[in-house]
Length: 154
Image (tube, rainbow, N blue to C red; front, side):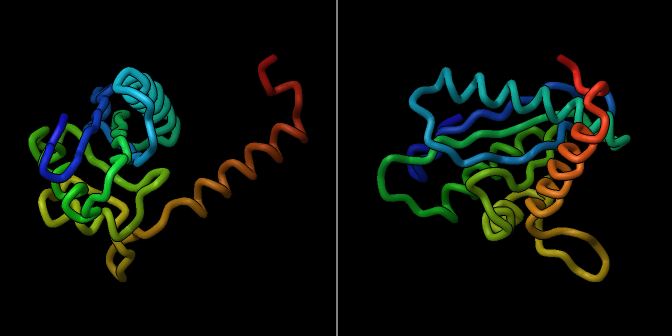
């Protein structure tokens, strides 16, 4: 999808909705071309399908990638334009933070659609920056691999 006014050039990939809406973050990255954007989005969406299923979540796998504009741009307007694309999927995809995006970006998205996670935490709901949890998962996985190398595929 494209929005010339904001500079948005993005891909939203839905790998699976078998267990529920496709869920996965939105990555803001410098891609050299549209093909690389599509390949990355599809690869990441597939990973989210497996990750969400293994975690027992009632969600499928999806991912979005936004090509970082190579010109000056209004970040809030870029994410609002992206949010309108998410909204057009009518709940089949729920976005969140990923590499290059922040809680503030999710707040901009939330002005245009309710299909967004990663908003600031509150008393009634978790939220905020997920990267510490991702880092913890990687750390624990490495520890498990070191303690039980026969469990790691060759």
